[in-house]
Length: 587
Ligand SMILES: *Cc1c(COP(=O)(O)O)cnc(C)c1O
Image (tube, rainbow, N blue to C red; front, side):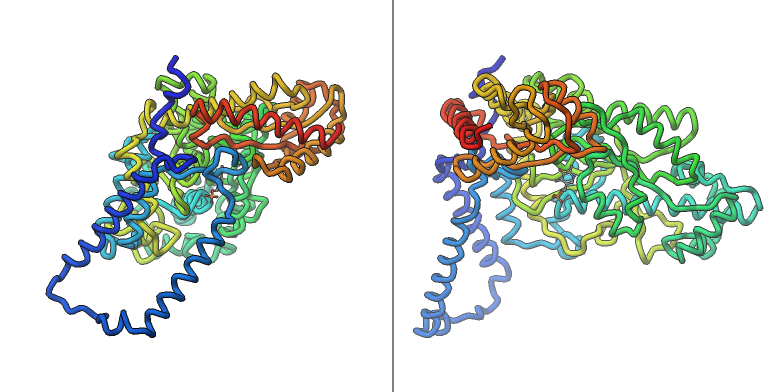
């Protein structure tokens, strides 16, 4: 087993004491030098526009002084910002930036490409395609076949998934409705809604539907209420629209999606969670059968790799197994989207020298992310890139397809030269793509590189937990922790949950007021998380008398915890901060 301090190339970060200052200064200087050199070298015969008599007049020198003062004020303001780069910060899913990400972001920022189209971004779009291929390979997609793009974050990437799901379903249903109305055969709604592109193409070549008539059968192109009525008539069963199956611990981006896409929150069917807080696969199967019986097409099944609350990883592998079995047994081609906004980068760990930091089931789940149809991943979380940087990935061009507004209805646009019509966002920066591109080219996403950094963060969570468990038995950890997030409550032996919840909230306040370390709080709620709450109460011998479990939450994603000097000093200090907090609360 490698020694702790060997865990990965963490010298790629600025350093909590600005250890890499001279390196950062020289690269920033090189970036600025190159930018000016590039500008000067471009169309060198063109005239200058701002003469010295304008730049250096007494009047403008005053303007420059005013600018310097305002800039100094801005810098002073930002000095009061939370120092999230410090390992003492374990509050939310943000920490240090890697230097390759910072250099890449800054370089692209100065050139300011707009990746909305190749016309305005002939280099930025290529960098984006290459960076997407790197991320695709990392999560287990074939990088040559995979498609995707960078978004402003995980929320929009999840929206991209729903948008495509809606487009796909609409194409299949419109065709099936048109055929049913023409032939007078009964529409098998659920089968039609999950026919797959292969069957779609087959039916198109058999029936040759005119594009204009298909448009009139489309709920996206036409009037949805009217189409729903026609589907009801053709299928002999009232049609109430599609559903999306999401685990009960879903990120609130899924509720926003319901809102934005006008699906109605009812259309987001919650899948049960097991006692360890992960998606319950037998419940997923029940819900799918229920949807079939109710004639509600399934837009997508979502599983989460790294939940926002507790960092749990759903059994992506068994979800894939179930969906494959249903396809074989019943012909349902059901879309599987993995929301790996937080945990996607953990896919760099399995198969490498540090994989034992993850449990076998988490490793198996992460290995299966590449079996999904589409994936959300957030480089601005565990990719250590600046905001705003998320990504949407699809396994291939077919899966990436979405409506292009001016294209003929039957033409399924694959990755066109321009992405503008295939992204929810219009103008898009190249900075996030450049940050990921440079990260891939330097640190690299191999298990012994990026995987080593992230394994170090998981180990940091374990080290913290072991130290606290030994020193402070009244701290009750939520078990098992799948990644680098530790959640815990404060409770005396046999204490009632309701009272422990109050004490935990007070401990959070006390630790925050002391200001030495920063944690966050989260609450598990019944009925969705009932099994997990009951398991926590039983494991720690607490009286289970409340509808919620209040938890303190430490996100140990900071790369510096794997440094022996940091953990030897700060872990005991962290334990002491908690001890003083507990004394202040006085359980
Ligand atoms: C963070 C997160 C999101 C949303 O991502 P943003 O980048 O904040 O928009 C979605 N899903 C999960 C599981 C997340 O952790």
